[in-house]
Amino acid sequence: MIRIRWQIFIRLLNQRSFLWGLFLINLLGTFYGYYWYKNQLAVTELRFLPFVPDSPTASAAFTLVLLLYLLNRRSPLMEAFAGVTLFKYGIWAVAMIVAGAERADMPFLEALHWTDWMLMASHLGMAIQGVLYSRFFTYDWRHLFIVAAWVLLNDTLDYGWNVHPWLPPSLAGLEPMVALFTFGMSIISLILFAGLGFPPRKERKWKSPLWWQSPTKAIL
Image (cartoon, rainbow, N blue to C red; front, side, top):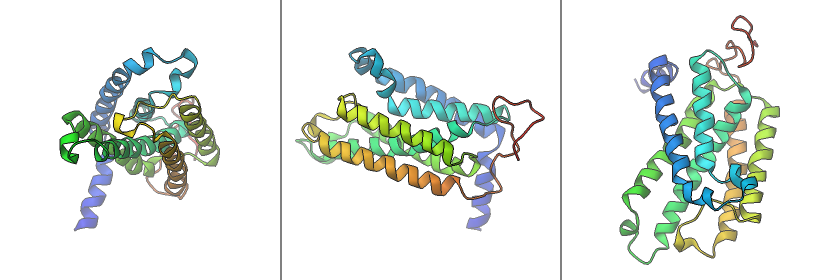
């Protein structure tokens, strides 16, 4: 019974009505995410702007992946980028919020505001989305290598040039530990999505054309 329900759920993930709903949720969440970073973006040097709003950029990539699926297209590079960054920054944000509340000068639950609960739920949803939709992805090691270069560059700039997302005040002084955790999350996420994305699956969208191809031409 559980297996049947799981198969029904997996089929639901690829239904157009579900894809449209998820697309709209991620689109709105992406806009809100960039708005959330408005104060930090306003004081960040122009050259570092792409490396600041990590979570909204991850959800923006996944929003584009969903749009391509709705258009019967695919982008392996965008799939790889979305999967890795959704999981990495989804888990990272939850960990930072929990760690900040744990170190706050008040009881743990009192330190968590409603916005913290909202952010934890939305970021956990990001990570889950990446894992669930990995069964449809069509990237290979070349795409994952490009994503690895980006996320590791991002980490280096974040903690080498201090442009990482602002941390809870209670984590002040722990930036070296946060940096180590962040680099670790990058490696874990890359390994995870190599394991999720490389093995053959019948659900993978190999029959869909690449985003720049004609509808009649697909990579098989």
